[in-house]
Image (cartoon, rainbow, N blue to C red; front, side):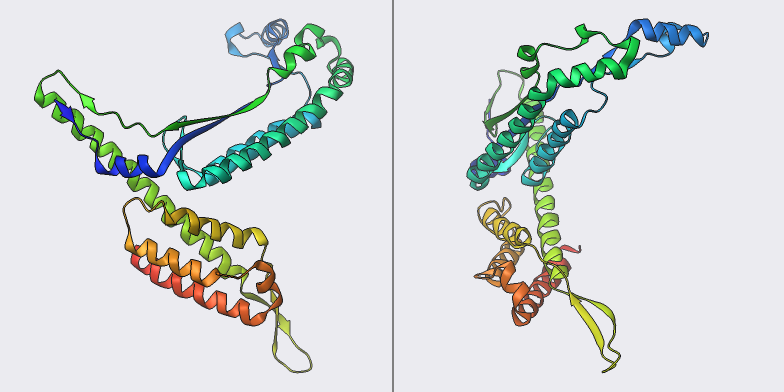
Length: 304
């Protein structure tokens, strides 16, 4: 019996790929059994009651910079993709060239931080000999040649699985399998659509806010309220334009309201830069008015 692919999954597979970005960083920690036993014994506790883990680099800034940048990469992947499973994320195919470009930029930045750390490694280890006192053990620290292999950034890309079920089993079991498969496909698409709508509204709210002004007091001479323009960054507008490009080919359910809002936002920002908004009150007002109008219609329909 052949179980055909659910339409939702066909739509997904034709417009997206699966990606995962692995970032390896040496933990620079090691359990010290001797000290662990000494501590538990001094507290009259069982050996299993606790353990002492040495921080081999004492949070040295050069190593900590790499640890922090690992999170920067993970945050970037999360912003760029949609959740698929515990090890892979869904990336719109149209975004793949930009994603790979940004990946290589992150990889270079990571390697630069790693290079700085490797250059300072011998000096850092020598410094740890003083900081750790009698706990210091040079054997806890790998040689430079081994150390490099404990770090790295790697991108993995694969297709959305599209295999048919071909079952030489009872038809009732096959039908149940198909129902489960179809339901999972629907749940994935539904989750992606909700996430799209949420990101879309978040971006528009951000632009609307940045195009507004803050009251900063009353003018002593005129008695009128003084205002101050809010800052708007180039990345805010670029992010919105990129989202418009992405959603144009990644509207999985063919949602007409999402497409209408996307097209409206694209028109509102056509030919407009953050610099234009910063320099012209007329442009700032027009963009905010357009964005608020789109937000009102789209949010009302989506009940957000």
